[in-house]
Image (cartoon, rainbow, N blue to C red; front, side, top):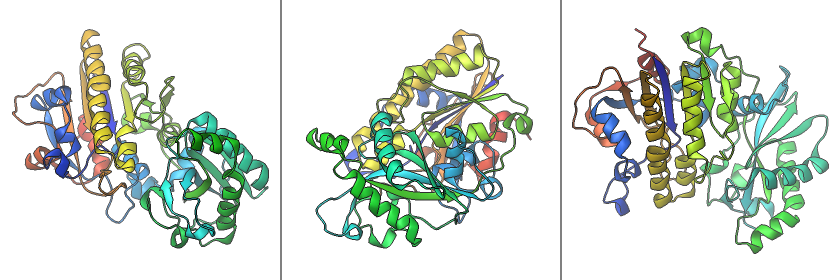
Amino acid sequence: MKYLVILGDGMADRPIESLDGRTPLAYADTPMMNQLAEKGEIGMVHTIPDGMSPGSDTANLSVLGYDPRKYYSGRSPLEALSIGVPMKDTDIALRCNVVTLSEEEENYEERTIIDHSSGEISTEDAAVLLEAVRKELETEEFRYYAGTSYRHLLIWDKGETADLTPPHDILGQQIGDNLPKEQKLREMMKKSYDILVNHPINQERKKQGKNPANSCWFWGAGTRPQLSSFEEKTGKKGAMISAVDLLKGIAVGTSMKVITVNGANGGLNTNYEGKAQAAVDVLTKEGCDFVYVHLEGPDEMGHQGSTERKVQAIENLDQRIIRPIVEGLRAAGEDFRMVILPDHPTPVSLRTHTADNVPYLMYDSTMEQAHSWKYNEEEAEKSGNLIVEGHKLIDHLLGCP
């Protein structure tokens, strides 16, 4: 038996008036997911432990079977694992987004955060911008490392686990009240704006109508994580397919195989077919028992507040990832059991995460059932199935008591 988690990041939502009162998942054309739901099980799962922040870090740890209350030590340390950054026990890792701030105001504190991803800036352009910041601001105490797209890393020697605001939580708001209280971090953010605002890459982006990446934004502070091996924990040899450093870092920390897919970029126009083929190959040709396929697109479209593009991301997941994986495994003669779900909701009306329960779809190729339900939030809620502790979903997938 082969096992899969297919995760549409931020896919869950709330009813939207322009979609006739339906959610993007219910409105989207998803024949493959609905076909699997009719032959499988749907329900709701609580992926975010009560009182914890509804982030992709806590949620994906939970889906993989790691109780965030026990294993979570911050988001950025997981990303550090992915980038290959060595961390001492005294180091603090912080996410360093390159963001878009308004430029009309005189004072930095009065600026508004427009875009947490700088228009989903390319990794290549962002690396050049981060290098400009690094040359001016890096010291023995603070070290900068390039990641993927807008997502980068700052390591603070003997630092503090400060309470920092995620930039996607305050889109459209003035930043003054949400800047770090720690003066060194605050000053570096202000200086990064002065370095980046007139950088040639940003001047060119503005000419092209793109959002400039004109400031660093620090958040997600944490210490070096202590995760146990996924194979030792479950008895399954696992692999991770994702374009996002956070998920790759979780895989590194849990000793899973990290699969890099060319053209996978965490955006709407990622390499869907490449991800699907990589999933089939790692299960049928490379000796893995389990694969975790992560798609960032629905989450990014939720943060952008784009209903239409979020629907498109969900339809792409259905037709360009789930369908070819199912067909590939069937063609290979493999028995498989899979769960499809979001990690958390990212409602387009809010443009940030919530801790609401999310719908799951469980399908077993050897135990097909017969139901009339479709896969969406409303019908999953009506099913009456509820997994209260998200980290136990993996046991349900693997058939553990």
